[in-house]
Figure 1 (cartoon, rainbow, N blue to C red):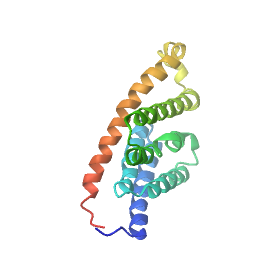
Figure 2 (figure 1 turned 30 degrees about the horizontal axis):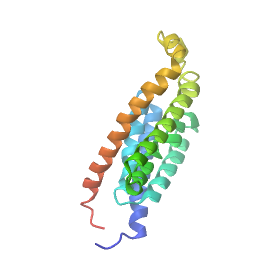
Figure 3 (figure 1 turned 120 degrees about the vertical axis):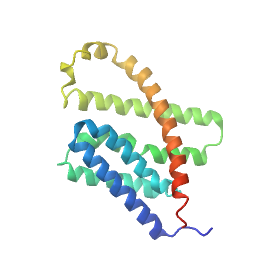
Amino acid sequence: MKKPTKSFEIALSALACAAAALCLTAGSYVDFLLGAGYILAVFALMLPLSKEFWAGSLLAAIGAALLSFMFCGFSILTIAPFLMFFGLHPGINFLQKKYVKKAWLHVACFAVKAIWFDLVMWFSWQFLLVELFGLSEASWYPFVSRYFFAVLFIGGTLVFACYDYAIFLCQRTMNALVKRIRR
């Protein structure tokens, strides 16, 4: 099989960037679709990774964040978690799967990614949810604020474990779908 050309990498990355920017923009305009917009944008960024274009996926994530930043009225706080974690996570998983061969290194990679996820969730909680969306008025807020770090590091790590495993499975599915493109 011949090696894909640079123009094919650019086209695939541009498709991923456009789809991710569209998902992020739609999620930014409709508050309850923000999480779904993040997840669909992550799926779009898996498109270049299926042909092993990790640089194209990274540039697509940056491009999608910049486009959605402009389309969403320059609301950086809405797309900050995507920029800080969700846009980069598929590329990190790809590099981990490709280069890490020992089991104990996979555990170390998971620990680093879990800490990274927990820090982004702390940032999102502190600066986005409480400040922007007024979560301090919710009835369950005093309980969560009292036990915040336990909830974050235990619950956040468990949620991340499921999310990380699901992203690995989704990448495998994306690879099977894109395998039909003969380039």
